[in-house]
Amino acid sequence: MGIVLKQSFNNILTTYLGFAVGALNVLFLYPNFLVPEHYGLITFLLSASTLVWPLMGFGAPNTLIKFYTACHSDNDKNRLLTTMLVIPLIVSAILGILGVVFYQALLNYFESNQAVQNYIGLIFIISVAISYFELFYAWAKLTYKSVFGNFMKEVFHRVGVTFLLLGVYFDYIGLEGFIYALTGIYILRMFILMVYAFKLLPPKLDFRLPDNFSRVAKYSFLILIAGSISTALLDLDKVMIEHYLPIEQVSVYAIAVYVASVIAVPSRAMKQIAMPITAMFLNKNKKQELAKLYKQTSVSLLLVSGLIFTLIITNVEQLYELIPDEYQIETGIIIFLCGIKLYENFLGNCNSILFNSDYYRLVLMIGVGVVILAIIFNIVFIPRLGMWGAAIATFSTFFAFFSVKLFLVYQKFHMHPFTSKTLPITGLIIVSCLVFYFWSFDIYPFLSIAIKGILTTVLYAITAFKLNLSEELTQFLQQRKK
Image 1 (cartoon, rainbow, N blue to C red):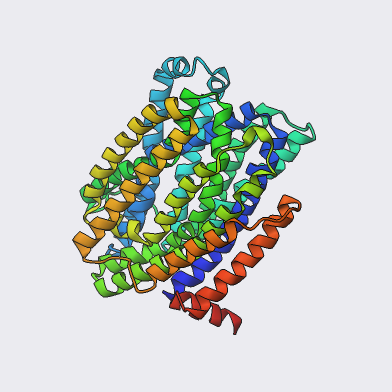
Image 2: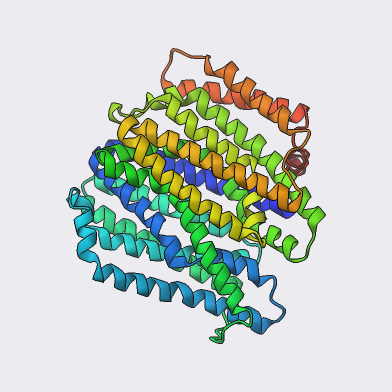
């Protein structure tokens, strides 16, 4: 757990740096420098790219992590690495050809939104860049090096967006220049991480197929479905809002989603290093170590994300006072979206256990059903309830999916994340929200957020430390002081 906490701590710092820059972009620069229609267009293009890239990657990043530690020789490793490099290229070429063949059909689908029609090709380019970026990130994680890749994943492109938005503000570039330059940032990010990954683990190309290629291919295909499921659940609501509501509503909902997504940062940071370690425990049949890691990650993530949840819920009204009126949204929607992110953190490394085990097929079948359910919920609720409908659909589908994963790990591995600390941490989160939500200061919103945030953090941290709610975090922080 030492290497997990150490790299997770570094990843949390870089991830929150990225989210801080992202918050500057999403909450202040985008809303003030672009009109809602243009902001909605950019949000839609990136969400559509996020939906498409798992098809390009064809499960290669996860497949590489799962099978690399199971290779018995350098030749096997070289064949696996080469195969993973080639697969996204082949799949992207096939999808590119299909895109050319059915280009007119795509134009017809976006007939009501000509702004999207002008940039359909960029969705494909960004998707390819993201798919190879994720592959090179997985490549780097094979050496248990995740911090620089996490920096590139969370910070690099957001800083680039900040400069592009400033360019828009000072009339150096227009909307079209912004979109093309943004595409260039994703491509540049991919090449930088490629150089870094190849430096850590130089490729030795061997175009012979791995001996276990049939198993690798089957797993890649199923992980493709898994990736599509995950990204569909994350971005389906924004894409369907574009279909049923005016495109500017995409930007309004995107801000709410971004605020809630801050809660998921600890989980994202820990996953980068916990995933290869989980795969190693499974490959070597170290069940006791895996069970211990499961509980430790759950407790640590629940405690840390609980503080973030409290800070958001107790300051959300003051936060929205800083945003232009056209981007306002009901507080209840924020609470719905934040609640499901908190539940996700409670699962710890549950996803890593399932997708690196032999039970991933079962998860995928359930996931397909959940995506279908999400589509139905969005179709039913968005036209009737607007963005409330999108929030309800998102909460319902994620809650169902997470609960099923929790049950599967318990049933198949006889493990669960609950400890004697789970209930006290949950109580601390609830009490903190109730106490600090009704505190208000009749001052400038930013100062109110700062004062309330400091008070909340100090009291939350002192309580957690005194009650020793996470032994691993307490020990880690004590070591950092030495």
